[in-house]
Each structure stands twice: as structure tokens, then as C-alpha cells.
Image 1 (cartoon, rainbow, N blue to C red):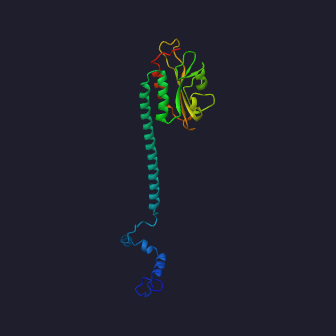
Image 2 (spheres, rainbow, N blue to C red):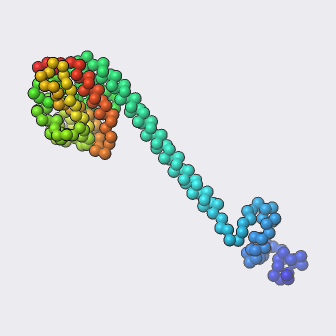
Length: 234
């Protein structure tokens, strides 16, 4: 190999990096095939038919790890929120069961709805005929079926005109959860009275048809069973 074409030749007096670099680019196989030199330089020797995806693969792994971490954080946040909601529900149930009469029960229900769940309020509505306790809302006969449907148990969605179950706070209620109840009051001539437990949220998406209603339904069952302690006076 002549010095005219080989800047690494022992006879070359003009050994400068630009010439060396150009020459190596023109003869890459000399570096690629010299495994000992590559190892000394801290480079990885691979076969000529091997394509290195190390950086790309590492990037994909890092992205996957970030996605998994984000998903884990979301799951943990949901779990914490569910646990907090369940805890508040259980405490609310204990508070409701300490009611001294139907009026106190209605007052406590409204209080836990506001204080523990951030709602505008809650109320109990009872169908006529028959007496309606002070603090409860009165519905005409068939009123529960009119709101929930003949066989409907719950309804979650936007507040609507004519509901009127939240008194002075009605204008603040943007969405509602309505839960059917069927309390049996001691001494009543009618075996079962149709009723509704209503919850009002200040947010339009506070209650939506796609939501589960297990927690508010549980509260409604507590209200229903607690109300059965006392006869309804006419």
C-alpha cells in the first residue's frame, strides 16, 4: 500500500486527522474486522449482518416503563378515592342510624350529603296516601313510578324541571341520583309505602347514567331500614 493512498503508511510524512478520517471512511472494514481494537476502544463488535437496535429498544422500554408507572399511579389514585368514599359512606351510615325520629333522619341525611360527599343536599320523598313526616317531601300516588319507571330502581342524570326535591337549594342542583325505597312502617294499614331517596350534586357530571350507584344505593337502604323504626303519624 503506497503512501499516496495510505496516510497510515510508515513512509507517510503527512499524517493529519482529516486525511486519516477520510481514509477510514473509505476503508471501514479495517476497523469493523479488528475486534481487538474495537474492544480496546470500548466499542461493541458485531457481525456485519447484525443491526444494532440498542438505543431504540432502550427508548421503547423506557416509554413502556413510563406508561406502566402512569397507569399504576392512576390505579392507586382511584383506589385511594374509592377507599375514602367507602369510609365516608360507612361513617355516614352510622350517623344516620343514630337518628331519633323521621325528621331527624331527614336532617341527618341532608347533613351527611353536604358535609361528607360535597353535594348540594339530599332528601326523602314519600308517596301519598298517608301521612308524610315533617321534613320529608310528599309525592302524589304513582309519583315514584313517574320518576323512575314502573320497574326502575335508580336514575342518575341531569336535574330536570318539576323534580323539586331540594327546597331552596333546587337551583344549585345540576345532577341528581334517585333511589327507589319501599319502607314498611309499623302500624301502617298499607304494607309498603313507595318512596325515593334523592341526592343533588352541584356538578353537571356529578351523577351520570354511566356511573355505578352502589354507595348512594347503600345510603338509601340505610335510610329505608332506619325509617322503619317509627310509625308515620297522620
